[in-house]
Image 1 (cartoon, rainbow, N blue to C red):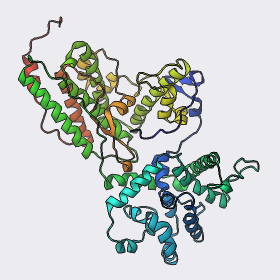
Image 2 (image 1 turned 30 degrees about the horizontal axis):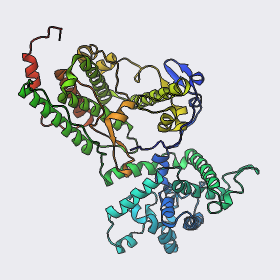
Image 3 (image 1 turned 60 degrees about the vertical axis):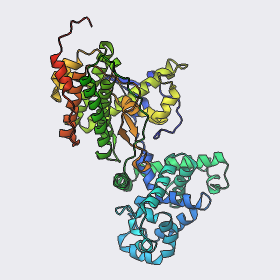
Length: 524
């Protein structure tokens, strides 16, 4: 499931255009004071009323109730801002005039607001537009049915998510007329769309329609970003966070390949302990999936922490189930990977700042951009190991967004792992497990989002990510060391993140067998 990044990738600034300061490569546009509007997170919830009109009446007729209600609102409007039909705009209507307005325009409100979206917004009592919801009409029509109304809301959200498609494009184009009507936008006389905009939408060619919608998107984004009225993002934050209370997460299930059977020579008690531990760990991940609070407006911190923990759990499970991963050569690689992720998780859980989480995510995106530039500048006929070309990677990063991504050539934390281990109180694990293992693999954001997280299939949750146990291949080895690392992560999660108790506890049989084992001769 591809959450977003629907823009078409293009050619980006090459290495020669990036300036280097310390370990960071900075693209030209990132030096400018450019801030992109997060359409899906912030603008989409604002467009719900307009989208409900387009959904119910179609492109040809949706403007009629939109302008009719907006024009009546103008008569009582005393804000310096233009009423665009955003959900936040309804909150700026003078409180002392609301009752009178509802009494005078009952039919209009029923036709243009209550019918299209009133019953949906009834589930959002702190919405800026809640004062227009007709509670009497809801009572007469029967109790609110979450299955029905939230299904309609879900459909609106899904249709709006492709922000450049015709449906969302038209919803974003309607407010342009309001901006022009109130003289908030001036264009040159020879502007190419002057003769086109009066003919939009029915009198335009498809190309002209796309041009108007593109201009409307740019104008609306600028208006939204520079208007103090929307600066706090109060409604979008409430919308996404309240959805967490309205509907439950629905993890996208991925098929899991069965592990290879253990050999007949393995001790039954050892194999039984490994099987039990793997099962207990899977159950614990399922408990985290359904019982961990997610801030849907700013889910990145939770995604990183849960992704790191999920990664550690997945490595531990695979170590427990596949004897082929106990070999010294593969074991050293996989155990280093687990140790690295465990140290990072425990550090972020215990002492991670907002800047740490931002650096962690930015580092992963920068590494993807670095790969894209290598393919674009040096190997135009090649693809990545997963078969992705430079335009495909650009598309995933968000095309223009890639121009704003820094490339960090050092580590994400700008300090070595030994220092992180020391701050997390895990220096002994660093010295005894991490350092001896000769792996160069790290659990970066790029790895987490492709391997250790699955999308929540609920559109009202913004398709945020959840921990998941899934293939592809992961790493494993010395089971005693792996169990110690995982138990350390569980303890950090319980103590610092409010994770639930791990019940039943992992088996100690592995520890008991390890204590009885003779030291290796070094020739195995």
